[in-house]
Image 1 (tube, rainbow, N blue to C red):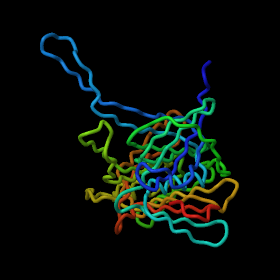
Image 2: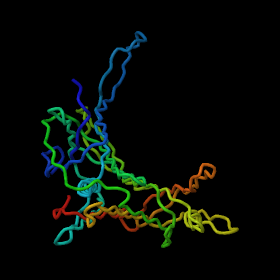
Image 3: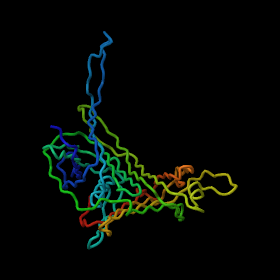
Image 4: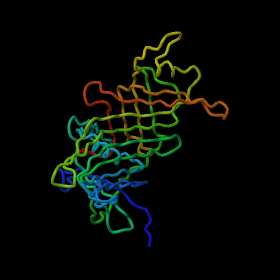
Length: 326
């Protein structure tokens, strides 16, 4: 018989590469996913004919991506694995505040386990690292999270029984995005936003094995998008483009800040806050469609840059978890 595509996904930090996970898995319900096993094939022709003589595997790369609905406990732990820095916990009672720092060097090795709930096995991405976490939210909808990772190899294992956190699915109705140029807020209403936390991972191969020997984090690229309405008398074009009357644009990048605060819809003292203390606006192009009864909206794109070091995005989680995520 065919099986329904039901399942869940678990993440955990390894004490060291390839070792038994140092902490228990935390589980998130899947919306969709793709576990990838991608061998490198080399074709060999003998020269005696036009026919292919050999097809040889020279290397195997694995990894995957998944989309999940977000909860405060789950997404807080996932962000800490991506960031790779310290998690400083403050407070003596619920809510406990987790201030998560970005790593200046390497990031943790993790194991990613994909359960198939109607089957007795799962797949394990062993010795993996998180490359990207994204958040997206449109008005009148839930907030979804996307995660992508690369790993040394994939195998199958005995299925683990998941235990889900008790957090509530996060919705855009409980999120507030504040976009500023300098200290001036943009007055338009946000109808949708995306935030992407990305760090390029380089997969390194060596002689003696088809498997990678290392996964190395390279540069980080923290960015986002938002669509806002243009209000009467708005300062949007002046702020984002840096335009002024009868003046030639200087080409000076316009900087400001972006803050997204997402609050649990039930436990309102639990939240996730992402702050781009210094954001450079790269796109702000109005979409004009006056004939179809739509409002004038402007999609804004921005990237985060550091102000001192490893601080292009500030990550703060308030939850019932008193223990550090790292």
